[in-house]
Length: 115
Length: 112
Image (tube, rainbow over all chains, first blue to last red; front, top):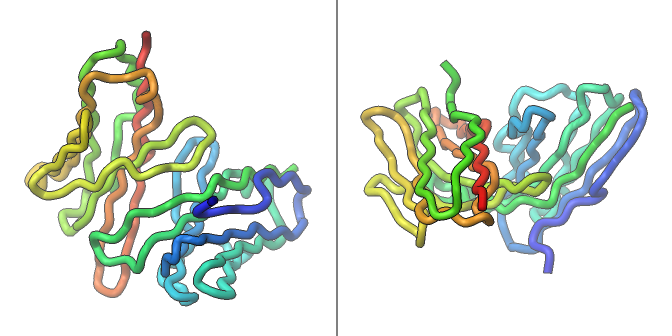
């Protein structure tokens, strides 16, 4: 069984479009994350939700909006896509984060290409 | 100074070699530390947590040096399958905020 799944795996779209990436975890975790990994391989956290509440919101353009309908799902919607949004987006989950509970399980990633 | 720094490598080592990587962090209030492994075009996977007293898991040993503000990962008897990028993660609690800071990773290539 897939622990953290993301759809789609690949997404090619044009500038200006709006797109969504979905993430689901079946691990019973309380916390979910979205990361962006750019071409230089830098992994940067974007958002974190704990029990459907936003707990980490790094500086990202407000074109990016996470939505958590329940604690097993965290979707990422991106408006007005730009060339610089091209990257691999990883979803991850973990148990409620205490200092020792940051073991994160990652989804396979969504490779977004904006043309 | 970057919050978390790693030597990007690549480290090229022969099978059976011992190799060590360091990861330095700038904020002395950093409280939790982890090593992740990322294979090419794959997702990161937790390799091991880093405990204050140091910890070992098979051929892998992780250590924390708070005085010098770095963590290390030692791999003994390298295997071809150890070829990957090794990422360190530092957790910083700052008041009500929690920051997860990832290093850029160190690339390891184990050669036959």
